[in-house]
Image (cartoon, rainbow, N blue to C red; front, top):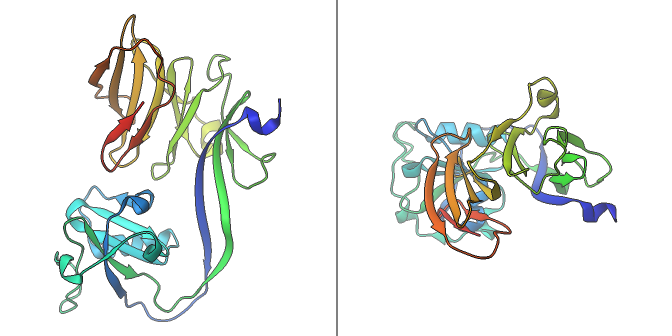
Length: 274
């Protein structure tokens, strides 16, 4: 079989920039933008109270040029070129004040379904290193692989088939912000880090399982939740758990004579399809 046909991929695509040094650290307000579905993959949830400085520092650590804050929901956008991905709104809609900002700055931190966008590096001009670097998390007969370059012959093995009791993995998913990879094999979900060296020194991936074999799953990175479909003797059950497999909740039961082939989730709307 052709090498590429043996692989099932989850694709993560990033643009990588090298920033040259510059002067000045004043933020430049860009505008008020809709929190659109097209930018959701670059929204980061902050659980402990978000302010503008935290958002800006977080985006700076990710080397993104822009920082957007949607304070009422504790979301921080880190990205580049949002003008192409989101709709600009009237500035008056971004009406939430940044309470911990500089006195007299009068900066806003978003509003209802909108975020205030700032240029994180106003005097720094990025130099493009590579506009199409792709990271692939894939399955192969030998296990789950992480590809760090377009060369598919170079990879790190995150989990081997030995981990799955010699079963091959059927699906993979990930939570990039938590540095976690997930794989479905032998009716169970296996969780490990996306860092190969840390896996080598650990006792192995965490196993998440149900009373009945899991047919498909999807990771909701927005709410740190895993959804799965499992089948008992007559019905499918759709359940949710946290990332460690706890707090299991049955969401619905489906009576069907068919099989669940694939499960996808829209984290922002909290909807899933099977």
